[in-house]
Length: 252
Image (cartoon, rainbow, N blue to C red; front, side, top):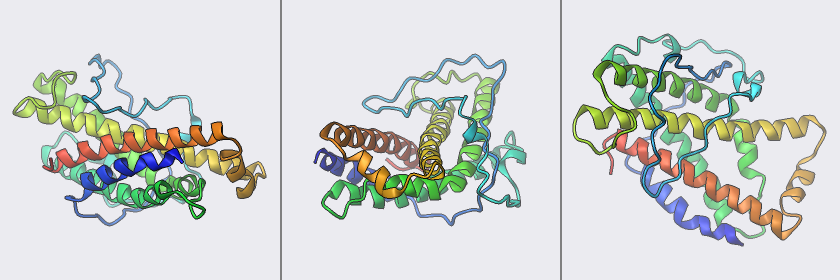
């Protein structure tokens, strides 16, 4: 199966997160809101060379506004209420988000590695079911990433940094661009995976059983190819974000 082409990707993904220690999971929250930046006119940053950025998150998917199956849990200092204009607080929240995301990627890597190995034991629904189980956790990370993304837009305006410039420019400008693109990348990656999990939950609510969903994914060679292409593209997008996160923590 063409899914074996994932092997180099999962190897690179593991390398991207190997240097970052795992962080304990924080509680999940219900609300998942994407920050709007009224009046901001910075151009959209270009993709990194040879890396495909995840597609933008559609703003019309109402399901991303709430994960109603997850009970609300009050956090000691939710990022939405933190003073992200305070450099120390912003740095702390950015590191926390980065480590949480890399910890989440480690868990996802194990499932993708099993799928890339192929064989009769590889369940094509495994990743979608895991996405469904992680909807609440991903929702919290999306909210955190969106708040920090907005904070870095504000910071760029304050210090006169063009966010469309090079990540490799020495000094503050390159660092601000890196942090902005990392948080935007994390938000888009997790929003896409959240939609995948919600699609699975919606199908189950309509009465479809796992056996039916599993059979539909591999019914024809064309459907198998489509499933494989989607998995490769999704994993490549996550690899881009993991590499940015590694750079944020001082990795290669």
